[in-house]
Image (cartoon, rainbow, N blue to C red; front, side, top):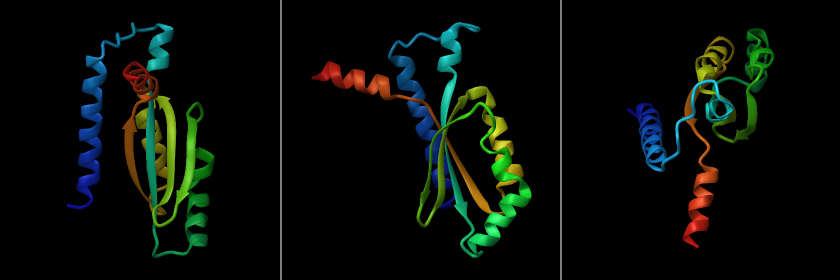
Length: 138
């Protein structure tokens, strides 16, 4: 049950976040336009929870054998941040086209599983809208 809660929360949060964005009157870009490419970008927060029952050296050897650092992140994906959170593991935020979500998932399945348990939280950049609303409220 505890494993389902973060996933259910992420799905719910993503669904709720999509609704208000459409209600704000942001027009959908037309296919093939420059705006379509820019707005197709999503942020993907990835939790790589390390296996605490094994020494770090063992985990690093496994990652090397599986080609993790060679394959991740896939070319063309922007690393927004890559941090280590003590007690959790690595937390990575990527910016990528939504159409490449499956690709990043597959790379992690092939190269990170065993050393890490993975969690994914797709989001989108709300900064400009949030700051605009803040400025209007002043």
